[in-house]
Image (tube, rainbow, N blue to C red; front, side, top):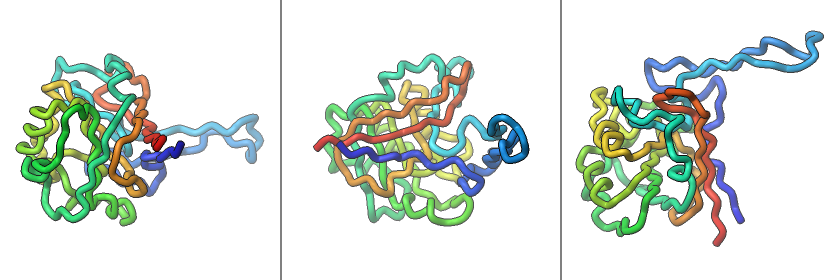
Length: 210
């Protein structure tokens, strides 16, 4: 069995979406300073790094993080690779894919190279509304992407988020899929149990048994 850790490490160099606080880990007790244990204060948003978006992210009466059925975040997942796209994904980009029976879909794009650059990269590849409609019609119940938003940076109104989340589709953002080939895996992506949360960081892994 091979395990791929697809979680972006939390560190001071982690890319964060503009407007979100930078991640910080500040020691508040240190053994080397005479304390009995090392303890740190963490500062981050609920959408820092690899994280889960739930309907409450966009809708006041939407499902919150602590209400998510965790089985939605565990089970067979398909990684689809779009290595040469230079535009936001449309329905046409999915036309040749048979998504029958795919409930959890992770999208690997040229975004993978962006993690190696310094700071937030606004030119990332996202989904269009036509792609979102196509995935909904295909029965996908969880969508993951390899940068910080399924919506283009130029769309602060979040149309793709709203389409997917309104239909109850969960969103995983900030996945690190650099080492993951296309194929089927077992996904485990468990969020922090944040009461009334609009989103939460996750530790996400893929297991491959073939």
